[in-house]
Length: 299
Image 1 (cartoon, rainbow, N blue to C red):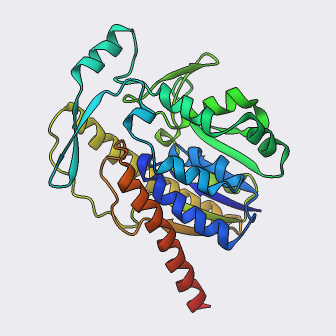
Image 2: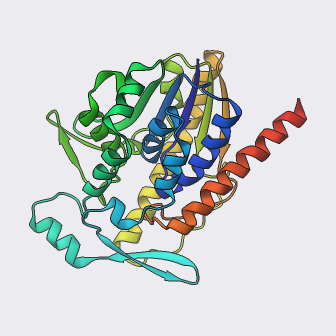
């Protein structure tokens, strides 16, 4: 069994889309399992359907309003660098409504339902491929993996949405008596789960450089401090997931093919810029193609 695993990474998912496009064109219909976290969860259904142009159009046309029904921050650009500030009115309005988060992301749920039709869902569910998304159950303090085979259309779309909800900036969802949030809070790169489900070759797209190159700018407000803190924690989770994945692969005679980003794409993946994401998709495709040429040369 061969699996495609895509890590979390917000807007950087555009780069993963480019890499996946090359892999699918090189190995058509070769994946039995598609497993994603956060932005990876958004990609995998369309990739399994081989509707690459459709998901590429989505990733290269979204903006903040496509994601947030109530955006908690403002974006300021200076010298080509995007920094976030607090949108005090939106945050106060959210708290006044009784929300536990700074912002809400119901527009993303609407986008998911518009991009995946009930007919496409049935094709995937009746097909031989398994589509699995990662979510974090905050109430039970555990990571859960939701397979398309276990749910109907509305509920599975909701699990995809939950997998992407980067709290406390996006929606916290209460479901089945538990509170759920972004899958990346527990498993950024679910390689171990792919191997547990029977994969013996895994193509893992990691939306981070293999070696850390980031020297973050000083925090300017509480939001930039929170994003820096979460960025730090998620980087540690990601590295831990990769180490565990390698260990499990060694003990199960599995092969992992890693596709890291060659450069730092952004230090704030909550900023959705159409032009930037279009460039990332192209660079992801070219990077995977160059990596494929290197592998051929070694052979």
